[in-house]
Image (cartoon, rainbow, N blue to C red):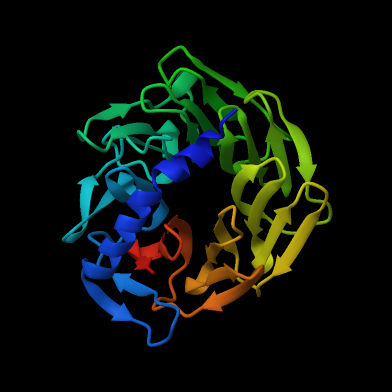
Length: 323
């Protein structure tokens, strides 16, 4: 079966290249670094923390505290939603995009779930599935717009899922492990993916509903981010500056320092980024992590790759940095 995530990355490759060109040529630069890392600060219309960032068919979007949703336009970042899907100002902690790039899904506090058509601007409020109003930490979607499987990571330790585009009465849930908060979720196929929870555990599913433990033994720190590229290719970021890679036979640990690393994204060619506390960005090259100089000391929460060289990272205080 074709891997939907691979299909999405292929479909968006040209968009990523175009976005990379746009990154280099527009948006107000308010700070820069004078070395070869290439990271620059961009003006942001919000002072709220930004918790996630995604690339869609219409460009880059970021979500954050107070229910803010930002869009990157040729004139810079603008606010397209303020208050979240319900208008109540519930913070948004996670986002993902359908395989065709047409719908941006986001989740957050008090059961907030939204589905934004980035081409038309139409917003659908999918909040409080099964009348659940707990905090949602992350979301992963697979499939095309209007036909997506939707997986939502709950702070209560439950993974909520709908195989019918989040329509009412189609939601179910599973408790993958001990009931600890699920911090991040990522799927590499329609029903195959991974989660990390607050009990220092990585779990996997092959059917989207039942879960088994994958690791990591003796981690001794929290896990915050997961990038599921295949069953034999999983990346996890966590506390103490650690990054783990599951290669199908063992977990390989890398130590980058002492900053908590909140998000990781690595492509099949072993190139990628991990971001975290104090403005830390680590760039993976030649199978090694190296620290990039950045123009911010704010804690970074998420990163998205655009093409082979470019990326956007977001974080505290409305911080947006681009390469």
